[in-house]
Length: 76
Image (tube, rainbow, N blue to C red):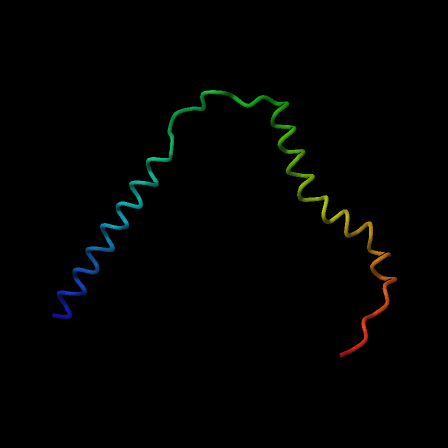
């Protein structure tokens, strides 16, 4: 009984995996893009990405002396 149940569960998981793979494959395209991205758009996108990564670090580094001057909280 237990052997038959494990076989059914294994078959069920394999069919579920094949369905997931089939759905995943349907979203992958093998054709070249219909519209090409120009150098201006690429530069803009890379600039926004770089700003999004570097702005928080720059903010923290700029305000580091201000953070150091704050009084330490009393121990609780």
